[in-house]
Image (cartoon, rainbow, N blue to C red; front, side, top):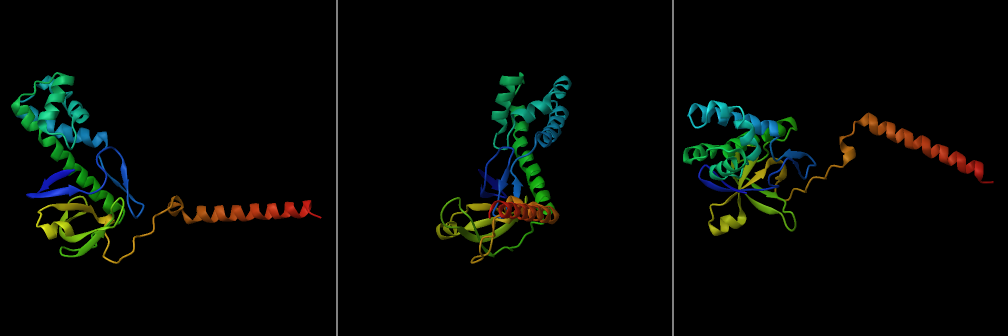
Length: 226
């Protein structure tokens, strides 16, 4: 997804939209979209603006947040959202209403960045690199991407000038998650396995159980064999 940040063209690196988590090299999972409750909270803020501006009637306000949250998306502009609301919920989506609805996508993006920043804090994912540092991050297939950090962005991400952009003079910058970046020459971290998250006591108990079962099996073999 392409978007503008402080006048720069930015490319989102990673999965697109949808209520899911993105798997990373560390095995941790970053939230990539908002829950419906979060979307509804943002939609309520926007509905209050519409009501205060006289763009919706008071009787419409009761259902407006749910309508907006149902049909709105980060990537949908106000005209698209207004058209869907008019088609499916009988909104009177004139030019002024569509202009106000245009803010919903950016409001969702800001809310998602806050959720991601909180997730990074809770999982002790910190900024490792500074502006000017060289970093690499993985492609889906093939060699790693490489570039120079040009900024620290909301949502625990770096803006990075890819080496190809530097060579061509392109203003394009990539948004790369903190947890996906590593220094040049640094080996990729081992991927976590499901057992990595099990408490040590559970692993110890499982190991002890397997040992006992092995002892029982050995004893049974001795009884059967001459």
